[in-house]
Length: 433
Picture: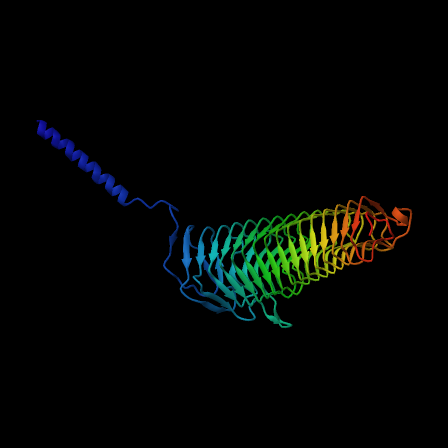
């Protein structure tokens, strides 16, 4: 009986293993357990890619030339890897190379797109990643230039990441139209009309991008607020390196070299810190208000820093070296403190300016240290230093009831070792000359 009973138990256990094994063998795989790669494919022009979430589609060759859209992404949460192959449009194509309208969380990488009006089109698209792509020759040729867009983000496209992409020979390299919260990092825009163009777009971050040899501006920020630009470079653009018309933007640690104007700054309440401008017409040109311009450097420009019609700004701890005019102030009610101007023709020049405060600035080895024209009145100069300038340390052409018969006030300014004389009129600082 014991043997027969043991045999029954063993048979029962064996039957249980067989049932469980069969159930496991026919159970479906867990959904989205991991991303999977489809075999390389070759879609035709205008194909809509609608693969399951987690899928990677890899191209095996070039596509086109296409008369409509190149490829349409029709599903979210997937990846398109062009593997270095090109999507080609016709020279008169008014559609897009890769269309991601309304799509979320898709990655598109390693694609070359040319011959469409829009290389990449994102309309109402969010959370997508574009990485390592190249777009060139978008749109038709008009007046010797292409008219299309490399990368277009519109209709409130947000939280997209564009990384290490290249746009060249388009009209707009990277264009954000009413789109917010995007990050553009390490991208390059060369020989376009505009390199990077933000129009009515706020809260974006542009970090480590390069714009060079564009026909207009390297970076144009128009009617766009609260954006951050850090460690970007604009070189050899025919227009301005950085042109800003907006409020509460931050430009930190950027470089502009050999443009028309390095930084062309309008709007209000912007923070401009630690940037460098060299070999431009004007290094920093301000026509806005209530901004803070601190710790920037301008060299070998016509004017290092110029304020025109710009009230209530703060310029602090900036350096202007080797320009025609280090600081040209043609504005009122600004605070200019702790700045340095060396080896310029004029260190600090005030033209038709009133109610400015110049405190603790240094002007050495210029032609003129501080120069005020006859229309500059009601300014306060306190604790400034002018040494070893070839003409005057302080030259004030105004007349009035201020210090030494001028229309301005001088207090505790230093004037030493200047060429023609210490100051004009004499006594605007000590010792003299």
